[in-house]
Length: 223
Length: 244
Image 1 (tube, chains in turn blue, purple):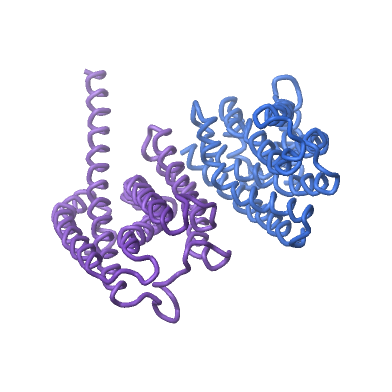
Image 2 (cartoon, helix red, strand yellow):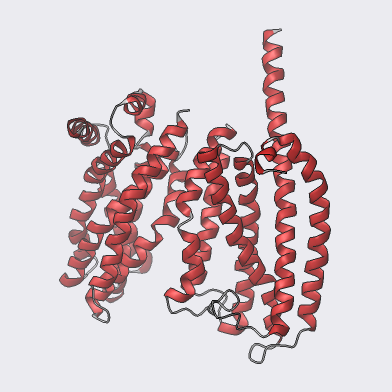
């Protein structure tokens, strides 16, 4: 079973990283989003420093949404979704593996890019470390919530906006605790660990719920 | 009549024909009585006349939460028991619940302006109700995005169940976080903390809102059943025309 899952992981990563996969687009989109913020609010470095963590979180959240509607749709189009449904491996585990591949291809580069973009916004190193760690803990949850949206939209022709509309309300707690943990690291008013642990708890919660709900949605979509 | 007999849409339509007018009359009478008593109740010692918004705001909030809970139960009915009317009920409840949720948000904003000095604050209770409203809109969007009612029902059911996490968050947001919104004052273990002179009209009004919700819900379910019949008849007619 683990060999099958490893094969799916390898296949999805290859598909994402090679030509036409579009894994790098998310990072470019993230960069573009962060770049337009100083144009919108003016190059006021103290202000940017104060809202920088929130800008990075919103940018990463929106960039993570890209491509989520394709996570199962491309498999549906080329027929491999039917094979995955017939496979003797639990569908929830397959869905979780696909989420992992998607996160490695799109989420992890965002986390890696965060310190660089943070420097552009004038964020201090401790806050920068905090943003990066919270994004590392939080972006998997965005992918896992998006997994449900992607599964619901798998067989729909035009679903990009729909997935975003479904995912964003559920991602609000991540934003709250992610930014709260970053603020805690800067101001030291509350310990960093308290909101950060809640953030990790939400990620773990969606690690369970996301694949199970996505598997149920896929099964019903194919009936 | 046992629950499973309602699985027959014909039986349901017969029942709905009797219940819808009865519930509508009951809703009118109770809401009229509740609001009438509410206007004759003494003004609040702190909030003065503004407290009367409560007789609309609080019942619509309860109905908004109740409608989502009903949708979640109906979603279980769709996915687990495959009750044929479950997804009809879920589809019918979504716009009605969204409307009550919006009513709650709007009356809350109008109440907040004189009391808190702002139409909107980013408070846990307000934000979680706004998320509830967004979830309603998401479910409605899924119903709109998939043309086959059976498949749309299952997709919407999964989304509804995932979004149900938000319902306890709305309910307990005032207890878990320090909130500008006032805490639970009716459903408390140690009894309500509202004076009976204000509580009685509130409960009557809430009963009226519940009757209104059920009247609208049954009417919407009836419309949905008829709409699906029309859809099937259309498909059959097209198939016959093609064959003949």
